[in-house]
Length: 434
Image (cartoon, rainbow, N blue to C red; front, side):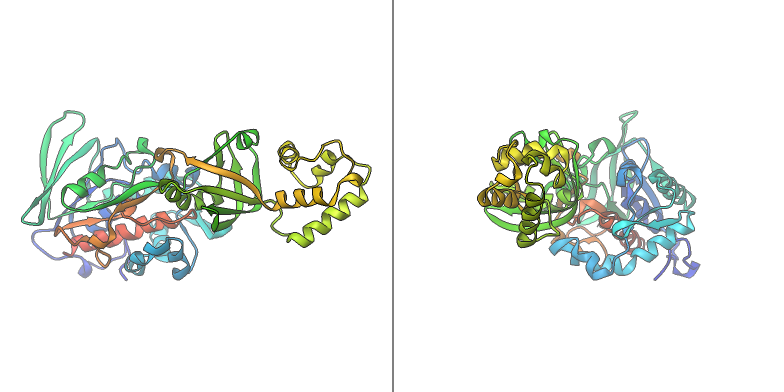
């Protein structure tokens, strides 16, 4: 496997006329794509409608940039669901170690944190953006900021260039090209430039688009419960996702109550299935197990012990031993047990109601936040129309895809960014060697 920044000269394309590659979008995938194509001997231009490249990359991982995840390949692919197998060729070409070695060559040291997440040691996403931007410039890539693609120019089923508009002068021109790589991202965080332009461009040249929809998105719940718990973060809880009365998935970890509903890592992970179910008009709810370390029998034994040892204590006060203070009013209302009742007076039926609530705190999901707030976009260019071994269109010769524009996405943990880097590398290499 060739290494970025370390490729011997003989691996670069030797031709009197270098392949002219136009990369549309200067995000994580676009920057890797452009630099790779250039190192393989291509003449590369990045067309970026924002003032600077890497806008979305700057805010990933809450500004810390969760680069990838130190996980074996098979397990890594599982985080992408059924479409994950599409990424195998890209990951075989450029995976975790390749990415980390490449970043190290650019001066970016990395650290592994909880959940095998890998971050830059500086904890600054900006450092990654700066390093990648400097790298593509050193490799002779031409960057055209504040420039928008008007259309991809295709003749006889083959790429011949792109029509662009200078957003400052509104002047139009044609940039000739032998290959075009679409790396425009999805529709999340539109202020960073991800506004779905790539879907329109791909559709205009014949590609079908799987419905773009939010993934890794906070969920909206009914009633005032979440609002009353706003700001409360729960750790080490288990959350189940229920669709039309059947449990479809579950996650263990951390979640957060907000003024509109639920957020936090495990909620975001479950959100794609919730969004799809809501779009299908199905009934969606979440079940929170507040005591996942205890099964029903052990939890009941603990309640019997606590109520027995503190018989003269009021119900509301014993709840401080079981719950965060903010949850106590919700628990009292949900269980219907008088807060002033002495623990010695709690009946077996009331104790059962409390136990069931602790193991199955339910909230109805009625919606999700807008796609502009999604961490990533699900859906995108139909994978059946793309050759995964090259990231090249099966419909238009010389058209390639990389990153979030593809109909492939994972849960949180660095998986999506690795996919962007890997598909970007493979697309850039393929375009340069077409």
